[in-house]
Length: 68
Image (tube, rainbow, N blue to C red; front, side):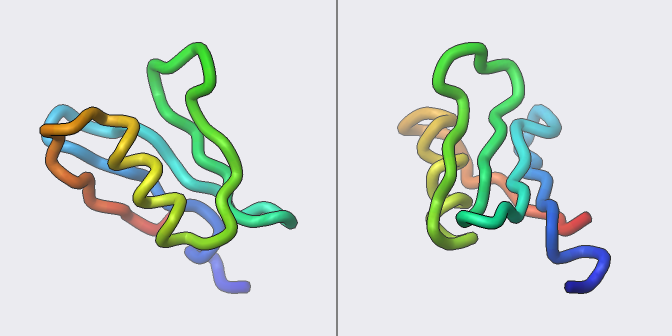
């Protein structure tokens, strides 16, 4: 594992909206500003990115994902 393959930050027009963290059982999504059900674990990085985008709402621009 390299230094930047464990965490990705999702950045939209208004700033950081969430993050994805590599976990033993997949990829854990954390959505900023969501208190209930604001995340989950997904089997692939692509599905986790899709979940972050979907959580932003139907007309939201897809965020950029930056590895950290």
